[in-house]
Structure formats: C-alpha cells, structure tokens
Length: 140
Image (cartoon, rainbow, N blue to C red; front, side, top):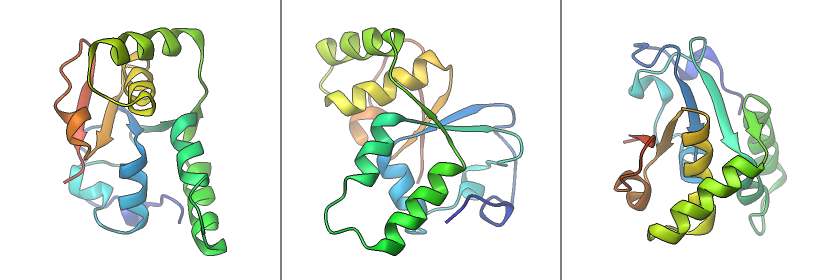
C-alpha cells in the first residue's frame, strides 16, 4: 500500500514537519486502523521517515504472506529509511540507560530526536517518555 493523497485528505496541521513512523504506526496504518488525514497530515507538506530498525521489524514478521510483504515494501518505498549512525547510536544508548524503553524503541526515539522530527506512535512507553527534543504524536 503506497502512501498516496487518498490517505491524507484533510487538514495540514503539521506542514513542513518531519515525521518518523515507529513500527506500530506503520502496521496500524497498513491495517487501516487510522489515516494520516485524521492527524492533519498532508504528505505533500511533510517528510516521511522511519528507522532501519522499523524496516527490520516489519520485514522480519513470521509467516508473512506475499501480499503483506508487498504492502510493507511499497509503503517503505514511500519513506526515507534512516540507517543507524554514531550520533543516533549514542542518543539511543543514552535513552536506554535512563528510561524503561526497549532498545528498538530507544533507537526509533533517538532517530526522531536527531532528525528533529515528530514520532508517530501509539506506544505508551514512547508517548510517556519525557526526553529533551522528543516530540511524539499519538496516532489515535
């Protein structure tokens, strides 16, 4: 499922903002549990990003059907996938040492902080995480 204008009708409250998807935000978008338009996101006005960790989590699902894999790959093609680098690594380690979040979530949060992006999630641990530079948006 590619991100198209049909998925983002509506307001453009977050124009000019970089957005980082966490794994649950991608899965629930592909499952049509929410739409970007419900968050006021106009994909023509934002940069859509995700971490390589999210890509790995999505593509490593057991017993994935060919259609599921195709939908995930199409969606990922519409995003910029951010690789790990030393800056993200250091920030993720800092977060993981100080907060009760899993390492993959620490990496995704660090990615969003380093990129000055809003993290799209419904993960309570991430939504409740108070960290300098971390901005989250609940997908619901």
